[in-house]
Structures are given as C-alpha cells and as structure tokens.
Amino acid sequence: MAREAGPRAAGTRRANPREDHPSHRWWVLGVIGLAQLMVVLDATIVNIALPSAQQDLGFSDGNRQWIVTAYALAFGSLLLLGGRIADLVGRRVVFLTGLVGFAGASAIGGAAPSFEVLVLARALQGLFGALLAPAALSLLTTTFTVPKERAKAFGIYGAIAGAGGAVGLLLGGVLTEYLDWRWCLYVNLAFAFLAFVGGWRLLTAGAPADRPRLDIPGTLLVSAGLFCIVYGFSEAESHAWSSPLTWGFLVAGAVLVAAFAWWQTRAAHPLLPLRVVLDRDRAASFLAMFISGGGMFGVFLFLTYYLQKGLGYSPVSTGLAFIPMVACMIASSVTTTNVLLLRFGAKPIVPTGMGIAAAAMVWLTALDLNSSYAAHVLPPLLCLGIGLGAVFATVMNLATAGVGPRDAGVASAMVNTSQQVGGSIGTALLNTLATTAATNYLVGRKPTPPVLAQAQLESYATAYWWSAGFFALGLVVTVFLYRPGAPRPHPVGEPATP
Image (cartoon, rainbow, N blue to C red; front, side, top):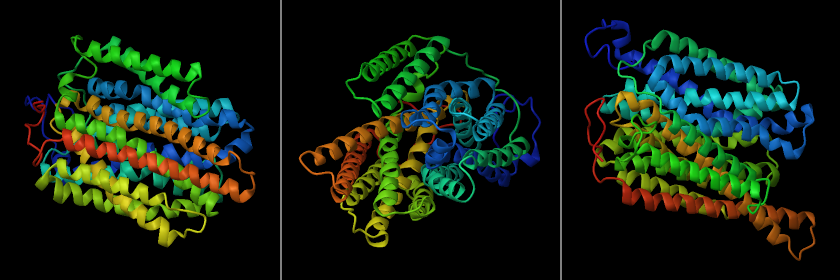
C-alpha cells in the first residue's frame, strides 16, 4: 500500500489489514490516475477556452500567452522542489495539499473578474501542480513493487499521462461550446474532490523515517534555472530569437542549471542525488521523456489548428478526432508494460515506439485542404497512439524503478520536469519554424485566401517534419543508452548500480 518507508519496516507500526489488501492498491491507482489526469489535461483544456476568455475579459493578443506561460513557469521551475518536499514531508500530505491548492486556484481562475486575477490563478495552479504531480508518481512507485502489478499500473498511468492532452482538448471543447469557458477551470474541483476523498481514505499518513535534508542552494539554482529556460522559450514564441529578452534568459538558465549540476557533486544532501540520474536506464528514460515531450506537444498544437482552420471542425469535433489515438495509446501502454517489457526490456521497445511516432509525423506532412479525416488523418493518428503508448508507459516505469523511498519524490519530479521542459522547448521551436515557413511561402505571392491557406499548410508540414526529427533523435539516443535484456530486479528501496 502507499505509505512512507521506515516505521513499518522497523516493526514499530501495526499492520492495517484493510490497507494491505491487494485490491486497495488498484483503488490507489484510480486516485493517483485521476489526479494526474487533472494536471495533464489542464495544459490543453485552457487553450480551447482562451478565445472565449479573451473576449470576456478583454485582454490583448499579446497578453494571451501569459495564461499558458504563467502555469508553465510555476510548474516547470518548481517540480524538483515539489518532489523533494514529498520526500521530506510525506507523499500523502503533499498529495492532498496539492489537490486542495490546485482546486482552490482553479476556483479563483474560474471566477476571475480580470486578466490579472486569471494569470495569478494559473500561476497558483502551476505551483500546486508541482507538488501534486511528483507526489502522485512517487506514490505509484512505492505502492506497486511487485513486477507484474507494477507493469499493469504503469501501463495505465503512462496512458493517462500521454492521453491527457487529447482528453483536455475534447473536454475543453465540450465545456466551452455548451457551457462557458470558466467551466474549463471549475471542472477541476470535481476531479480534485473525488481524488481527495479517495486519497484521504486510502493513503497512509506519516512522514519518512529517514528524511533527507533540503538542499537550499541547489533548490534555488535549479528553480531559477528552469524558470529562465521555460520563460526564454516562451518569449521566443512571441519575440525574435535575437531578442535580448529571449537569449538572455536562455543563457542565464543554462548557466544556472550547469551550476546546479556542479553543486550536486559537492552538496552533502543534494536535491537531485547522482545515484538517481547515473543509472543508464533511468537516464535514458529522462532523455526519452524530454525528447518525446517536445514532439508530442507539437502534434496536439498544429493538428488542432489544421482540423479547426483547415477542415472547419468545431472544438468538440476536434477533441473527438483525437479519441482513436487515445484508445490506441491506452492499448499500447498496457500491452507494452504487461507483455513486452518484462520479456524484452526497454531497448527494443522505446526506440521502436519512437520510430513509429516519427513515421506517423512524416505521414501527417501529406495532409492538404482536400484531405479527409477517415482516409488521411486517422491512420497516422492511430500509429502515433501506438508509438507514444509504448514510449510513455515504459519510460515512466524505468525512470522510477529501483529508486530508494527517500528519493522516490525527486525521481518522479525528474520525469515530469523532463516532459514539461521538453514540451516548452518543442512548442517554442516548432512555433518559430512553422511561422518562418509560412512567411517564406508568402514571399512574392499575392496573399489571396487560397495562398494564405496553403501557407498555413506549409507551416503545419514543417512542424510535423521537425517533430519527426525529435522522435528520430529519441530513437537514436534510446538505442544507445538502454541496457539490453529485461529490466534488472532491484531490492525494494535500493537504487540500481550505474
């Protein structure tokens, strides 16, 4: 059952038959999955609501990006701190605190009377999400330690993490079209309430017996560094790469992260111990999540544009168009972790998933204004779901396998940080490349409606090609880094040998 290590192992704690019953572990998975879904879908559900929110609150196009950036900045820069707090204080209390805080911030955002209040609410959502996401994954890691059960649990969790963005598009479309944009935020209260009640009843209270100390210099360095990197790439979406604001923050972020890496080799109680990142399989998993995060966010963003602007889909129809991909992702995740991973290991699985995803992105480059959903959009979407499902479920499993209980929170935070920073970098790069492609296409042409439409297609195709490049890079990296053979069993609570 999900609980902190230490007291029970020492025999100072009485067994609780209700909590030790195997069926309760699967209820815990339901609670954790619900919380993770809330955090992941929030990244896309608000995007659907932005036009309506802008019209209601009257903010400019230039300020619109801050609704997304405020969340990304707080979430991305504080994840490692949130993971370490879970290790220090206890995963249950941090998980429940994150749920309450995220729900409260969502209520503030839903009732926001002005742009400034909405931005503040989104930043608060990111802050509490940075507590919630690593606590949820570390609870999963410490709850499911039997290999077969762990495989099933991570298959389901990986599918939720990968498919949450598409679910957000559908749910955001339904709520915006039939209710109001504010319900895209209010809906989190229902998710949080159900997860809180389940967590309160099922998760065991208590803090770790062997608490690591908080590395304050490391915390400041990495939080500031990640903030600068996420902010720099966010600015690149609306400013030129040559802008001092853009490259200045990126350089500062790189220097701070490098200083953080140096400090971790010398700190007595490092925020991110080297034993967490030096394992080959774990390092490969962090890199795979970083790379695939950039490619995945690209397809959601640009395929959404294509369906709505190119084919004239409504928000609800756009969300429904992604559902077959979600179904394939779930099937692929569960099959991969239950059947393939335990038999073959990650080395053939993750590169194959990356290759399938890359092929799907190349396939999408053939879309034009005469394409139909069933014949031209659906087949590559199904392939993408299969590829991403194989990647995410395997990566999340191995990124936390063999991690000691005292490091479970920060290891889980590294998974989320890799995906978040990768997504921020990928989105900024793809936006810039797509915009440049559209601008270049218009040079020397009269901007008639057909020409403008073709320019948009050029921009989408460029984004798909580069997303395919991300996945191809992921294929190469994971082929070389992952160990051959099935995952090596490690004693519970002991890290793997690098």
